[in-house]
Image (cartoon, rainbow, N blue to C red; front, side):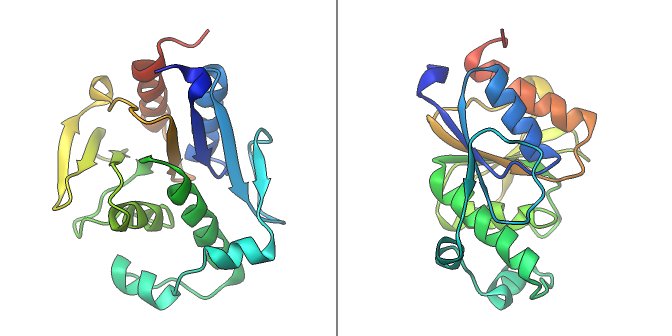
Length: 189
């Protein structure tokens, strides 16, 4: 795949999203970072500021998300806006890559979990690097399959892809992101 034809959709927040953006930039890949006024960004490249109406288009019932995710999401305006920007990230990408933790109930920990669940609902290829297990997992439609460690990074196969994840990015999560890009696009120049 030609890096010049690709676009990374992300959020530009500190942690995994910033690392996805930095890898995209090193590999010559365009990035689009969906955000909203007042949100903390670690990336300034490809910022797409969503206005009130656009955020509303990505709105979802927090009660529904809480039931789906088996945990409570508060109705705080910032949380709602973060979930709305994640909707844009996942909706824009043809395949989804997440750095986080797969929980026993098959959800992914934290706000990032909504992105993974939305990818499942949209039937998009979904890959999660679990920092605790130090392994990549692929969603089969029925459950998670462990596909291996850093050396077994999935192959990016769609030109428009999404990279998101935890703000608490560890060294193995950073290495997983770089392995993902290197496998698909070769070593960065």
